[in-house]
Length: 195
Image (cartoon, helix red, strand yellow):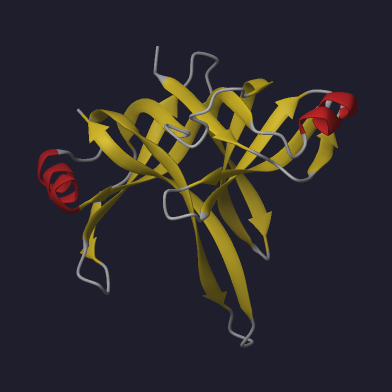
């Protein structure tokens, strides 16, 4: 059975109901740089519980998922966390090990090796996680510098890989033909360890 485990510590400010007893919220997970990763979370709950945990320091566990959303005439991949458990976090080490993810699966597309404008070597790969219930999730992952080169040289499409890392978010401007610009937020797994 494929490994798909996540553990985050953070807080949320708002939530919305997206179905019967199903809620969605953005968990803000603090980085060492004082910025925050924004992680979409969905869970079965009730309004009373959602209100109770709002603004609190919470720890959640669950699994990473993906779905395709049709936005402005195009399909976009949305990454979110299916929350299995949420609880108030009482420990003093709230900001330590607050973003942990362990996943494994097959490399779904050709790995792309490139350099950023700052000359940092990165490899982009798409991981396919096949769950026991017959559902497959496609998760974008990114490796840096030495790991980026090693993964590009030693792994290829359909290879199986195990990854430990963190789920990060980043914003980028999407420019349309009519001149308008939309700021998008995307999520990807930043690889720390792999085998």
